[in-house]
Length: 322
Image (cartoon, rainbow, N blue to C red; front, side, top):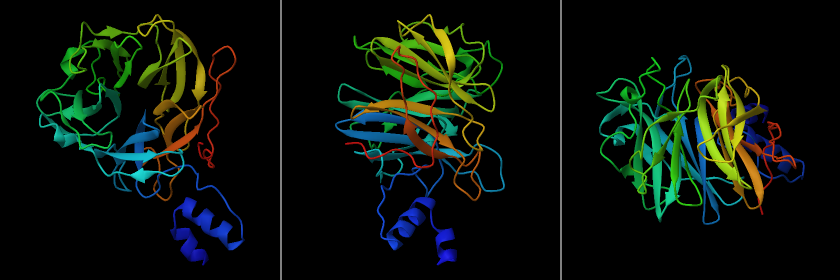
């Protein structure tokens, strides 16, 4: 029995042990996906369900590199039980790309779903951002432009090939959409009404002196929150503004280094009256770590003045949302 339990995913093992002793438990546990390695989570709330999108880490156990070829999709109506929907999009579904399915985000706009994705360009050196579209949040998604939205030669002040990554899209109450992205420098630009083109110049957030990557923009009670990764190994910190374009006031750390994982990529959502912080760590063993990561979920809390409390990363995860 002991040998069998060691071979099972931790969440399944816990349920079997509790059942053996006549106890009951919620199936919630971190990491939430245990059959494959998942990283760089993004989430969308739509029609009473949460849709989770994550890249699939596929680096072999003896390799230390980011090997990601496609994204996976899961959904849940309680934040605990997750239904897999397979892969709605792969990097090579963009015919102008040659691979590397890095961080992404999906947003709903006028009844369609737009998948903003980081991929490596086939003919322009470096990482780029593409846009795919679907009639369903679970896909399949198809290239909406036939070309990249952002390419590495559009941001030449940073001399690295991976500075145009990690797109996050926020659509404000007036319908204006904003794209934030970047590594080393945080960039932003307005998007056109169809979400398929930049509407004006690319700007840099000059206030961020220790920006690494992974921006996420959300709004609460009239305040705009821009959360992002800083330093390396990464922590998550945040800034606030009364405008989606800044200027930004920097605040403190909200998530410490996540387990045995160098990166700290997150999403923030509100669902059924509670706020959630979705992130990854390297907890699944054996062979988990910086290149074989796993998505986790814990609660996010605000202070009465609107500041964000530090996230408490747990192995128990969250309770079912009602």
